[in-house]
Length: 431
Image (cartoon, rainbow, N blue to C red; front, side, top):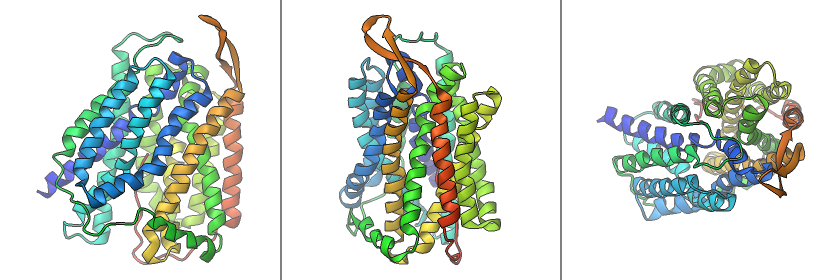
């Protein structure tokens, strides 16, 4: 029974992140190539999910906390996401695609937290110690990162089985078709997950507001949150601009974009399992945080050089290193400085700022910066319309490189490492 439970929970996590990983790495390149979308328009499409991440967890969390078993909500949400993803794949206008992206994002965003809650709920019933429970979650959550990688390989196989789509020619978006297909598997699987009933105690959706007192009570917390916000905005350059950059700047085949970008997820697995724990024990929070923040500008500087291509592709690994070092370190820092009764609220506040608000602002900023360094030309099919032409990719990537270097310096000179707590375990996440 335990093996079956772990298998079901791991499979749930696998498909939870496979549906996201199917479209995120490559859709920006597809939108530019097939719909002549500008950077600002692509940023608007990607920003929909991050905006949904700000507002819908409270709605979805309240539903499963009060009225509906979590696995039922997950199944219903996954089904709606499958339909909306398929409808997105058939859209030939940005307006139509954005409309269905709103539907997809509103139902997908709350499931990110709900799947975590399902796993912890069932692990807590296994008579495990806290350390064993967190290690169990670590193993199960890693299946999500593997799902992201596998979806990129499936997309590569799918794209290779079809003729290439000429630039400026519309065709259904294969990455969104794959998202819909993988979503069907998640829909079915959700109803095999053991029952996860609503909590007996209704939870306050604004409980994280209690964490705001940390700004007053903890010296340096305000500065830490400001730097984290700024650094996280630059994180979005990887998601939004790397796809078009690889296709246009590096002349990499469209089908290979997603597999090459999955190098970041391979590096993330290694970092979470090996490098991050070693760095935290040997070097401490501050140095680990600074190293992780510096991984991002190092990657962007390599991107700005644009050659050799093998080095640019290898530098994708710095995305995983930075993500693991920065966010794991930040979660541990929050856990150390927050009083025990508001730790969960403090983590929610950090996620809202660094993953929600910062990601939303970052998508809009990176999209507009791409347009700023792009030369627009007349559309050959419609001379009265201007479409994106050549892009100065070096200048685009120098901006986040400089910003994240300043963030690393700010962490170095302002971050004060709190004392280590007893029996501290490393949180695990993935992206």
